[in-house]
Length: 392
Image 1 (cartoon, rainbow, N blue to C red):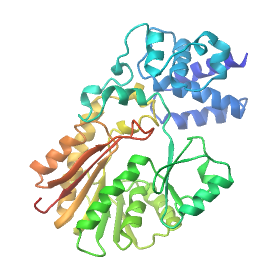
Image 2 (image 1 turned 135 degrees about the vertical axis):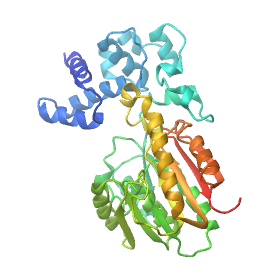
Image 3 (image 1 turned 90 degrees about the vertical axis):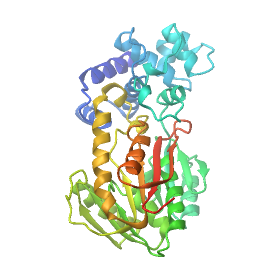
Image 4 (image 1 turned 120 degrees about the horizontal axis):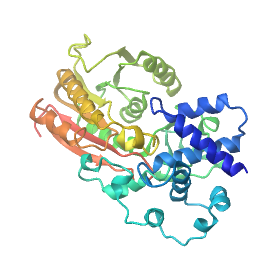
């Protein structure tokens, strides 16, 4: 029976996976080596595995096959063929919400720390139980429509029969399974960017309105794949842009992405900003964007294996790294200018405590600082703060 076969395959995958590499890569390599699985088989087995990781540390009293099945039950909000065959009594239950499903399996009151054990580290505004439960549902796919391309993208999606929700002007939410790269011209017409990440554009707009320079000099210091740079380009229109990253391969890929996005006026360079004086860059900027390396705890809905394999010691390691980066960036912010500090972390030591460090130790003044909650929108949760070298 294929359902037992899929369950056994999921057990094998989970037992063999050691957390050293992203699970999506491991799964891709597994299926590449196991050609016997068709597309429906791969989808079913993948769903079982991801459901298992999503429950974190729930249902420890169960065997692995039982945990996987229970995980699918609590992570599924639609009728499921697998459960209908193997657990028809569960499928017929009248339960109102995820919490009731968990308590039915556990036979006891739900505890949020069983999904997310690091609740004491969360930034204070985060609703702990709601945040923990959010990991049980796969986040949506969000795209940001480029200026002037809104009608084109919507028309292409409509013609392809793709449903979407317009979350806000220029922001669309789609099912995560949509192969968006086959439907539109990515980066030219729209950018794949999480909803909370798109909301950092509000902070960029606020800074734009405070900068007197009509063509500001901006440094995206931890550029990554370049999503914030493209957002910055769309908001500021006229700017002098520098981008840097510690990884040369990222900068190479960014070059191709910028070309597609229509960005040609920029300078890129490799930099390890955790090391003092690691670059000869003495340039002064109107705005430095520091989307710093972090635990990524606000994005674990997309990488739920972290709920099992994350090492708590990494929280302090990232916090120290962030302090070093901030210390090295301060010298490049000219008077009466700005630093936009961003993380995709939910931990206060990476968020509010870093802002306090920048204020108390580095002399930067806080304009605005807050969590961007995505856990109630099937999106990532982020943190952003505007800091300035001028009096507030």
